[in-house]
Figure 1 (cartoon, rainbow, N blue to C red):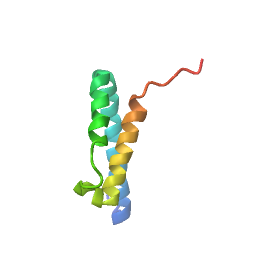
Figure 2 (tube, rainbow, N blue to C red):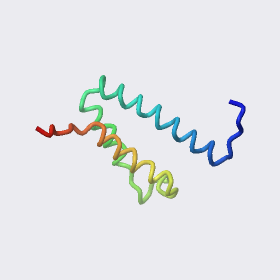
Figure 3 (cartoon, rainbow, N blue to C red):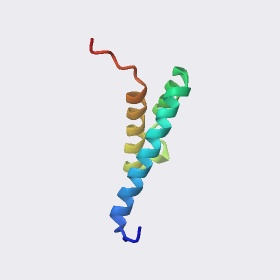
Figure 4 (cartoon, rainbow, N blue to C red):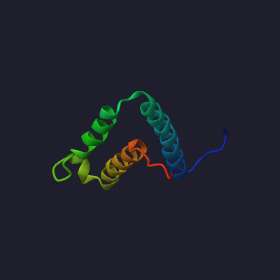
Length: 83
């Protein structure tokens, strides 16, 4: 990989790599973690008080936390069959 990436493209590449790793982790958790563990994961993130938590001051971090909650809930919410 001799090609040099711009800072923006490198950042995008890093984000995509992280997304792929996270997907793999979620797949493993989906197999081995009981429902209670999955619910606790989402609930821990939901308990962050955005009014006082330092992470809330950064809009990128705040959005990341909100997206993480949504992904956990989407991934672990039982899907109803279309039958």
